[in-house]
Image (cartoon, rainbow, N blue to C red):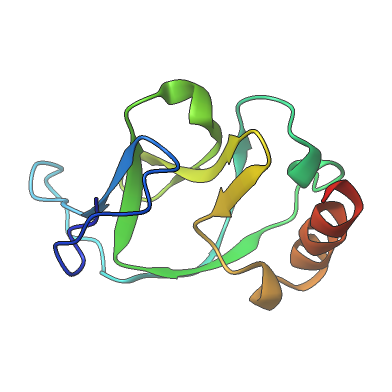
Length: 116
């Protein structure tokens, strides 16, 4: 399900896409979250092999809330930690834009092609 458009998803992963809400944080952050940010790796994942300390380019107003925390392989901080990379079998998803993320993005795209 996604709040963006109030629609159901494909049902491949048990998650919801929700708009950032910073109302309880006591500080104002810009929406959309736009710019370079880090990944905090939670577990090994073929898609993220060799990404090291690269930063990735984000442009989004929504984030994923996974019902199954095992789907989340990386998180990013923007007001709070949110899931920024998921994996379920051979299904991968990134919250950032690999194609705009310079060397780190190229590494992720190469990993995807090698493991596909």
